[in-house]
Length: 101
Image 1 (cartoon, rainbow, N blue to C red):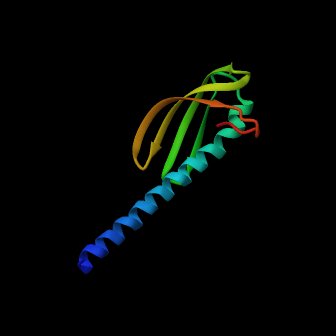
Image 2 (tube, rainbow, N blue to C red):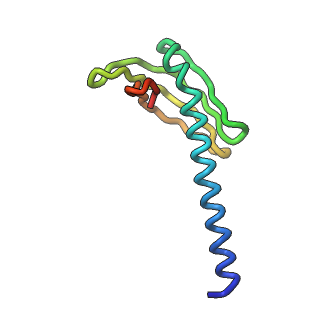
């Protein structure tokens, strides 16, 4: 294999690891930021979260319900991650560890 090919392959590996690292950092920041609001805020309330300048979002709690005896909350989310906007609906349920997942 040529040195140029090996260099390009190494560079691609570094970029892929960096991308995965960023995604994990944004995911962890969001997961941490939603814990208290999902526990304390009523249906209809909105809150924001931010991971530095790379990722941020706004969540609105749509409704609270029980699923198989577990408290869950349906939320709508507007997120901006690496400059790309996303609109999603998600359900978070309170785990046995006491965290929203």
